[in-house]
Length: 340
Image 1 (cartoon, rainbow, N blue to C red):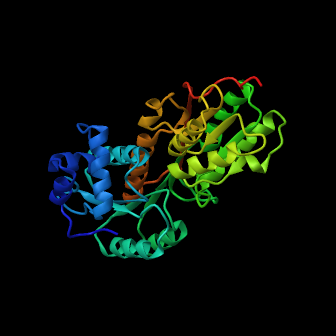
Image 2: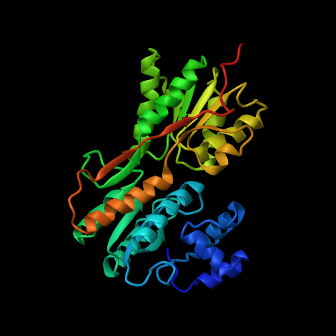
């Protein structure tokens, strides 16, 4: 949980950088290398630093929005933060950042909710939150406007910004099927959020288009973390008839899948094809570069704050649910099915 005793100076000292560098990372601004940005984010996570005040986060005369995220150590979250903070600066809104941690913790969630309800926060942005229903129910009870990023309810009436998750995976499946792959493994994301179900449905749609049955041994549940990509790929490769291609529900798990394939001597893009989802910076820097579904993460963050500000001003919104387009980015981690 947040530690109000930790200051930006403490974070800068531990990370061995300037306070300006820390401020730039918190606000999603350029001018910091990827390696340094990761180190700063890790220190923030470890110390529990909560940038809940200060001139860089709340300009004079601005209103304040809270951003609640599972963690801030991934490029995925950094891209969303960049979009949100850019919009906040444009709209003269301050930003308060909270991290839930990588796993569900109802005590930590309750702590943050008590802070939000008692603070001067005007609205809340949520990124793939743990304990989603608990959080939303509490925000509704306190009449706090909110918008969810990369998740939505099945009812379709929650303010949210997502991407075309189902179509994105379907595009990936069509690409692999066109290359001749028929045994395709799929690693889901956290199944407590709808985007994971949407991506799984895209996988099923792809198989259905060519009349292939769904083989449950080729579907394994992941959690968006690299270790689950590694372990699930290990399990796939131990099958009597392993898949010739694997689609992971995010790039981080695809990186784990790459490690598992390389561990047994497979040549990626030749012996096995791998596809991710998100198109984080590292996706183009892996060896070989990763084929992936690009999700407009920064635009999702920016759009979410635009919707929230519209709600705060009580202006009419034609729809509070936005779905931004994905794009298949073909690189060298996919190739034709190997000839046996």
